Length: 430
Image (tube, rainbow, N blue to C red; front, side, top):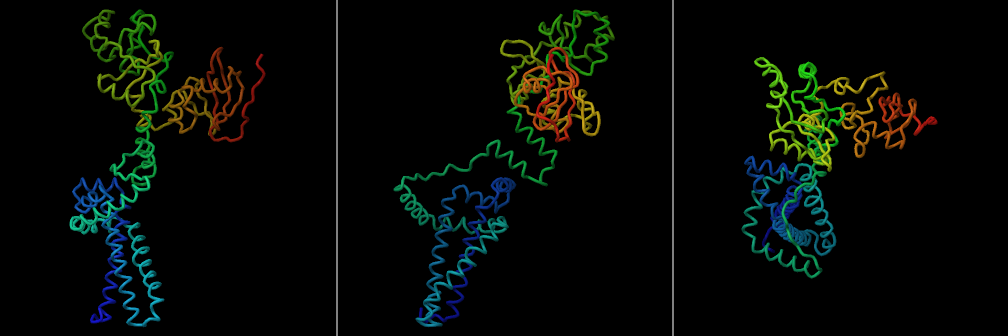
């Protein structure tokens, strides 16, 4: 060492500081990489991403080579700093050398490179991967021994080291990723993706057309009435029953039947001959599963039944798709025929309106974890059938009962932009 010039020792110290900076920055850069973007780039053939992904498959080996290199580099740097201090300042400089080298390593070997790597992980990690892969092959026996000793120490304290590979994301974690995507995903697409994730939580009972609103054909009615209904119906497929919806015969494609009438006179046998057998859906089926079921059986419409087999409503493929993409119109006034804009701060809403459809059309947040209709929600809250003029505040929305029947609420006035309203203002029930 005495024959080596001082300038060479200083140059070697600078090189060691650069190496320490490389090891520290590379470690932070590789660990800070976005795993999903990394896999995407690796599948696209990016060489640096492929090597980085290979390193991160077994991070304990990669961390082993980084810490081995960093530790040796820092030890040699401290040794050289001591020799340089002796040559320049003699024994009196030995007290200053450790503090100086600690400051240099802290700034240039730790804080600065790690901060830079955290800000630009790909720019540092991908080039570093080309160096670490061959280094790991060369020093693998030494890294293996170091890891074995480290794991043995952990084992003595009852810690069992194991690496199970990358973990998959839960549904809620994926929701967070989508919501925090910002400008990378347009807002409309974000809503669609979140709606897809929510399909598992929603059942067909939440979106079905209630039994009393099912538009169908009673085959026992007069043919003039049936023909008028077929011509004026807004639906392509209609349920056909005899006397009551409980006596369902099947579904008819309106255009197919009208096409037959060009050549033949209408009769019940002709209608029965083209009916497609009814398709039943359990009320508790999730929308995700029902979407797959519709695809499997090649159907677009089904009757929702409860545990006793009684028909509760009707669900269509379009209903499920609207849960994903929204209503097939952008005008709230036409999205829901049961919603009427009375003024700038009030709406008249039919009590039988589905709450999910109401929230979707008006961008409100009425609770959907209980009753399915606005009438049911209010009745559950009040625990009685209110009189017209009753006011209440439900989930932050001031509501006023406008019209009722003997057993249900028919019309409700909602003030979505008004905060001042009593919790309950119930007139006496005579």
